[in-house]
Image 1 (cartoon, helix red, strand yellow):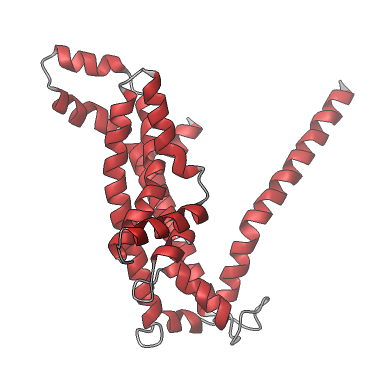
Image 2 (image 1 turned 90 degrees about the horizontal axis):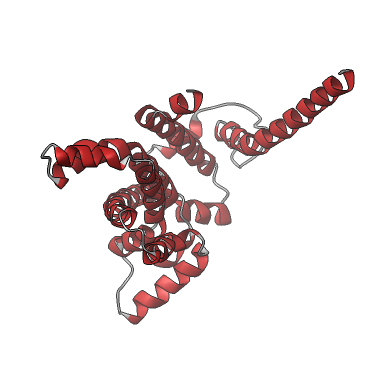
Length: 272
């Protein structure tokens, strides 16, 4: 009994240390970036010699950071539209495939999910070559199309998972009571799969905002995206505003995660 107890304690310590190390690896760089964004130094330096909100003031200065603001608006526009369009298409695709039990449906499912395993750098180059052959010039609309292919599988996967947990008896009961298929979808199916759709759209939006390879190949100086702008700033000047941008993105992501948790009730479901 004593050996068993000592073994359990040792196992708990090892698991705890590994978990703590994993958390440190994940959270450590974030804390370093946030601390650096409050520095009084002219360059990216850690630990900061002093604390100041100067670089956040510089970041939100329209005259000083006009190019950053333009890139941020472009990223928000592309991510928002790509998520909206991709979300609608992915939901319809998931609804169609979930109702088919033939092997061909599994082939279509794998096809829809293939962008998740395709290297985004290879896809970005292939997309640039494809649109160049068609004579389509880079624009925000082209960026939306490029991002849509990459992020739509996130919504498709989460929606399909939600549909797999949907009890078919609910739809059969509504049909027996005289409800149309559209009414059953609006009152039964959609409310039940809404958390999955919301979670997928959240992942898709974040993935689009953070996408570098596709934006790198399909953007121009006029359609600069925020990640590309940050990359250019790091290569040329190591501007401290990069850390301030990262701090704003971290805060915005945290707020979105809290909102998504409230909408989907994921924490409540896991604890229950």
